[in-house]
Image (cartoon, rainbow, N blue to C red; front, side, top):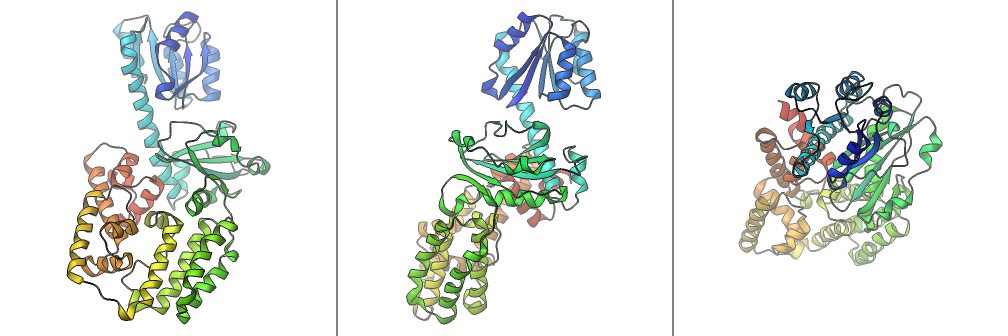
Length: 478
């Protein structure tokens, strides 16, 4: 929610402003009402509201003085003037000082919707711009960029840090899920339409060790919360962000929502990898079904998460490629991080299904046959479908089933006919679209990510930089 205070020396005028607008509908919350402008200024300095709606002529400090004094303190607070003075000079001066709008008393009810929509749009654009700048700084190797875009990390040499990621089922409605935490010690960054990041700091480690109140799940829209470890180094924040995002991704394994803390349990996965390695090395396919059925059971039994999924995938890929390089060189078998796995496979069950299909493919290598002509025609239909739907979530398993092509053989067809993997092909389409929008539209980078098929801005930023060599923000500037 965007915080608002109303300042006017007449109580009836404050009541009029309060009732004239549908504040909550557009994401605003009134946190203060003042008839004394001196107290209002003190409140602004301490609480830093997003918006101040104020009269111009007031005893002590005028509305214009309030704007000037706030700007002198370099506070990022916006102003709207509501005044009984209709002289153009007042309006001109208020706008020159940076006021977003100037309204006359009494407020015309027919104009309130258009005004508050304008204000909501202003704050949305402002937040999107701020998010883009901060996220770019957080993912940059140049740590000085953080100091340039936010004062959050200044003078915090004795502070401890922890990062929280909250994932929802749909569009976040400006809800502050961390209301119990001191706003001065919290940096909120929107990761995308379904994910919000909070960087928390405290001089006391115990404050951050308390975890998160389970009451956050009173909101049915929340599906996962990820908590990082705790560090007393500002330079570790990028690592903590990754940890919290990985922890929040634990829902990927079993589909259950919850609060997940980052931890590693790799030792529990090693016996599974050993069993899979025996199947691969000794071609013991008679035990394949039993081992594959055991994998999700062990993950669920020990509450294993994305750390273990990444380790399992990369170890299995390593053994497969070393044993069957020639047979599998056209497959999408490569080492992947957690975000890349989630982009490629809908869930952990789908990932296990792909590995199972690889084993079946190896088992049947000596006596399989394909109707090349028919399969190629189906494959081209698949390509046409991808070209027109790359902005949606796409998984090779579902596409292969839709066009009646074996999933493993689909991987080969991409390499054989296009010279690239399925993931590479989809990524090129999405990044190409993003580049066009960055060049020729005024959409925010977050909106462009969504238009191109990325619902996680953090991942989009990394994918774009990997493909183009620079971040989306720098691409747009260039």
